[in-house]
Image (cartoon, rainbow, N blue to C red; front, side, top):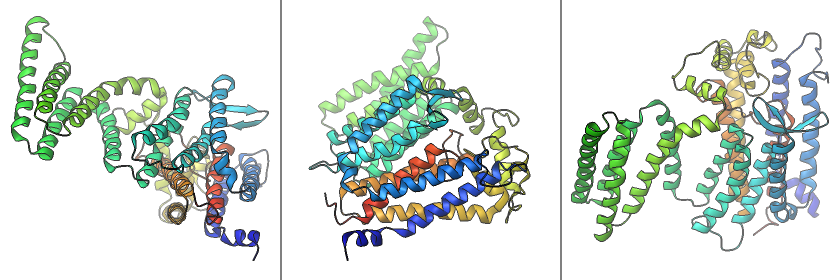
Length: 474
């Protein structure tokens, strides 16, 4: 058996089949979402479904070419590809066209490209290249900082567009890092920060800071069993709060409680840190710095919320959190999407029979809200099939990643799984109203070339690496 025959046999045809099923199902649902009775043919090039056909054919050619390229191309050119993706992100800021408040698109004639989509697989290649280098361990500070820089650079350029949806996708790399040995406490820290962000939007800061301080002392006591020192620190915080509150009451008459609590904790925390340092109690600095950071982060949430998100994104977040009620305004998309999915019932209304779809009640139904077409026309059963296919794809990617013999391929594979999972979970979460609308596509389903091509490249590089996994043992 020659090498080429062996390579073809080693291709994971199961995952290729799932890819083809998802792409074709996506195309059919785009046809249903924007169906035009005057242009009934699904091959009509003047309609979105006709354009999507061309994009799909281009994706198939792209996938075929990726499988033909020599294996070592992806390791050798990982950093140049990453650098080129950063260049595209810079160019879009200079030459890009602004759409829906974000300068995220480059136009080459009639062809539009979204560089942020391609930056995902480029960053994946760069991280896999770095972590596969000799004597690199993800648990080391040097490795974490280096990977952090690789992730942060595209995020910084995407912030400037700004594109909150694409920005958040880059946080999915933390799942891959956890698989490579990143301590679970780091993921816990990220989870706490995410919870603190949302809590800071709906709860008064005075309660948040008081809770942070109380929980901090409680965790310290349970972890170190230093009951006396915990009591001293907590008593010092309370005493300083009473003193500062009394001074503020006398001198300034009206000062917000959270300023007083913050000042009390920062001063008492510093004193507590000094006391425990001389008593040689371990890990105190980590606890205190974590609490300092949590309180500081809580104060910065309002600024980030106001400046990093567009007005319509903030409105949608407010609606999700129950801060606003606007079913005919900013909440219209999600409200109509849920109506469409719910109206599909168990078996759906039937192909091209969706009333929410036919009368364009759901904006962006062929892109961000493509899943509501599935729910309305194919019902619970159809939705279950689509979700099942995505879950099977994710599990297959994880299985493929685990059988790799090289660090490069394994890291790349888990990054693919992380990105696909993030897109899949967030997009469907948006459609059913349990997550905020941040505008990211459903892989292989949503209309658009950049998304389809980027996910195709992302997946088929993994298929190529897997087909020759015995050749790459670094």
